[in-house]
Length: 278
Length: 206
Image (cartoon, each protein chain N blue to C red):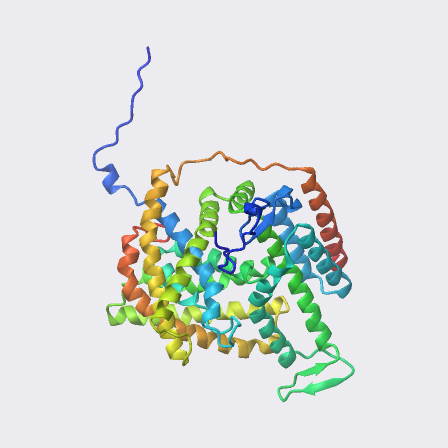
C-alpha cells in the first residue's frame, strides 16, 4: 500500500509488518495508545490545540504546548523521521511568512537594524516574533499530523457521523481519502510517462503552464473514466442516496483513555482562553 | 385475512419526475475531492518557482472552476473539502484551513452561478460564452477569492497587513494566468467526458 503523503512504501519490514497497522498517512504500532482513543476525541483535541496555538501569543504558553505535542507524538509511537516530510510541505508557507515578516513588519524595539524605504524596519523584537510564530505554527501542524497518523478512514467516518453530519457528506470525505492513494499513483504514472516522452518541468512560465495543462487533461479524463465504474460498483453493492437514517457497523465507544485525554485538554483550553480573553 | 394494496405509479411518472441526486454525483464529488487534495500537495512541487519548495502556481486553481461549472454544488464541495484536506496535509493548521479555503468556494462558485444564470455553453463555443468565462471565471472570481485568501492569513499573523498589496498582486497574477491559459482547454476537451459521467448538473445539485 502506498502512503498518501509521499507515494512511498512505509510498511515496516520484518515480522510481516504485523506489529503495525495502517493509518491514513503512515503505519503506526499496534500497541500505540492513540489507537485506543476515540477518533472524535482526537478531532476535538486537534481543533482545541490548533485554536489555542493561534489564539494565544505568549512564549510561556506556546513553547510548553509545543513540547507537550512533541511528547504526545513520541508516546503515540510516531517516528520523527516522518517529520522531515511535513517540514518540507510546510516550508513554502513558512518561507513566504518569514520574508513577509522581515520585509513588511514594523515591530517597535529599542534598536532598528534595517529600515526599508517603504517605512518598515527590522528591530531586535522581529526575530523573536518570527520564532514564536514558528512555534505556534509547528504546534498546530504537529497536532494535525498526530490525527492523520493515528486515524483510519473508517474511524473518521464514525467520528463525523457521531457529530450528526449527513451520511452522504461523511461518505464523500472518507471515499475521497480512500481513492487518494489510487489517484496519486495514477498522477505519478502520468508524470513519469510524460517524462519518458521527453517532457521536463522547466522552462518559461508559459511553457510550465502548457505542460501543466497537458497533465491535468490526462489526469481528469482518466478520472472521469473511473467514475462510471465506481458508480456501478457502489450501486451493485446497494448504495442508496436517500435511504433515510442508517445504522453503523462500528459504534463509537468511549473509554477511560478518552476521558484521560479530553478532560485535561478541555480544562487547559478553557483556562487559557479565559485568562487571555476573560 | 388482510389484503395489502400496492401503490402503483401512473405511467410516465418516472420519466417526468424531477431529477434527483444520483450515486454518480457522490462518486464524482469524491474523486474530484481527491484530485484537488493531490493537486494542492504533491503536484505543487512539480511547478515550484523555487526548486524543492511548493511556491508559485497552485495546480488546483484551474481545475476547480471547470468542476464548479460541470457539477455545480458538488464541484464546490469538492473544491472546499479537497483544498481543505490538501492544506491539512501540507501542515496548515485546522483552525486556519477552515476559513482560508472559503476562497475556493468563491473561485469556483462565481463562474458556476454565472454559467447557469446566462445559460453559457461550458465548451465556450461562442464569443458570448468566452466573454462570460473571462469576466466571471477569470477576473471577478479571482478578485474575490484572492482578496479573501490574502486577508484571512493576516488575521492569524501569517503576514503583516503592509505585505498584503504585494502578496495580493503576486497571487492575482498567478491566478489570472492559470485560469486564462489552462482552464479553457480543459473545458473544451473534457466537457464531453464530464457529460458521460451522468453527474453534470443544470441547477445547483441536480
